[in-house]
Length: 315
Image 1 (cartoon, rainbow, N blue to C red):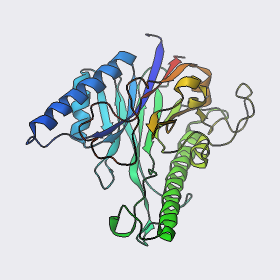
Image 2: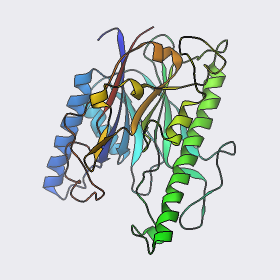
Image 3: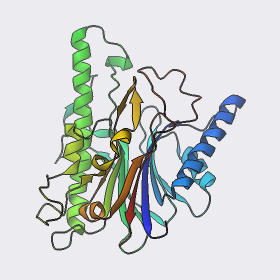
Image 4: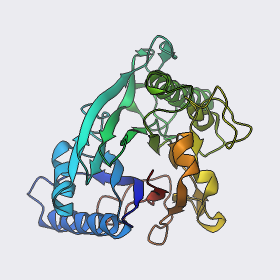
């Protein structure tokens, strides 16, 4: 729709370019790029935040599949598996920040399972500016620590139940520290662009938060609570609203885990965008249930997460 602004967030599940030695992997990759690009184009999206992009080359392959005038910005800080976040847009796109550190104002002294102190997000977040008219759009995308547990030395199994409990605690601490780091970053950029106590550049935070809408880590990303969106107050300059709370009840999930739908992919927006929201949906028709094991997913064409798509009126 010409007068709308459409934003999508999508965990595209291990989008790795194959090494060229396996013809079946190359065919699967080509089919996956075709699936992803067709779905993105079909929504009329203006900007797409991606998670689990395997390399800058893979992001470029998807951008090329979408064609001109699409542009891309890719995180320079992947995790140990090589997956990272990226942003594609069909408007002029400027990289504004690579968000990587656990800042002093956040939780900078969180331990990990090997007894070290964490200093950075496991996967860096990215902030971009999309030149889509008027003040444009500021977008930050993040992929927070998953609920998958690891143990000392990279083990995927605990030696005893004490270690299992401790490993779960470490994972929660890490996801919390990452959420606080992103929120501290947003506090600075939102406050610096505010005008007369109101949001300046319309801003979206989106991505795979690996927690539901009511989890503490997700709620703290929203910032101060709001009693009435229609009544301005002093928290408006830094507050975000989780648009997933307005999803159709039957489609309020972005992944199916062991047969149960869960909403772990989110779009949070400043007040001006919240008031201009036309629709939001999770495109869940193609996804299937997954389990704890990721074996057998390498050849999957359809990602295990559904894209979340929000449409706004332009100012």
